[in-house]
Length: 327
Image (tube, rainbow, N blue to C red; front, side, top):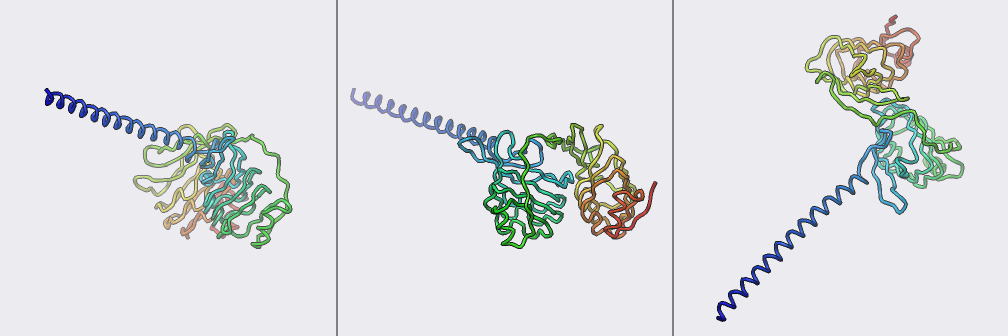
């Protein structure tokens, strides 16, 4: 009898252990799943995300009164934008920090206006910005890293009198002028958030659709045909939207002799046709109003073909590029 009782108790004990083990495993698995879901939700809330206008890549820190925004990367170079007017808030959250390398090596930006919410600017945030001419830094900024502007020369810093930015400019030999910040407003006439990165005809172009003044525009980012042709005729429209922008390095390295741009194109990015040793002529219309730096770098025989007295003509003269007049 005792043996049977002992066996029964043993079985009960084993069963209890199994229950505890299974229950513990179940609880542990539920905990892991819950942790993963919590991390996913946290990442969605605070990790990398586009700003509402599509021109900034942001991360956030939790704060008692909302979220604190970090500007991780400026995306305006993709659209050949010369001015970056940084918003003070995005979706109601304050933008406080310009993080390291945020604008580093931006070749298009000429003017940066920081809002009165920014407090600190990180390492190399504006390093190697070869086109930068003006940057507006409000009195709210109380920290600028020593190498923030490494490799960036020839710009003027606009500061508020007796501010930290003024002291920084004086200590680092940066030319500066005083300015009064404008009131912060939340209106804008552009929206680059509706990205549709697709491939035209399956192979030829990678492009984005963005909005300006409520009108859709197409920016070509990369030309990559299966085989090159002697004459490249860029389409006026892709998916029914006007092609207005040829982004930086969009035609880099491809063979072919002539590139004909449509009348719809207004912006040409830096190095757009670089390393095209075989290139002979690029045809611009009078509608082009912005051309970036060194569009023909390492393309020594290239000729700009455009109407006389157009912006492209002036660019050719200013940069000692061969010019051929068109009607």
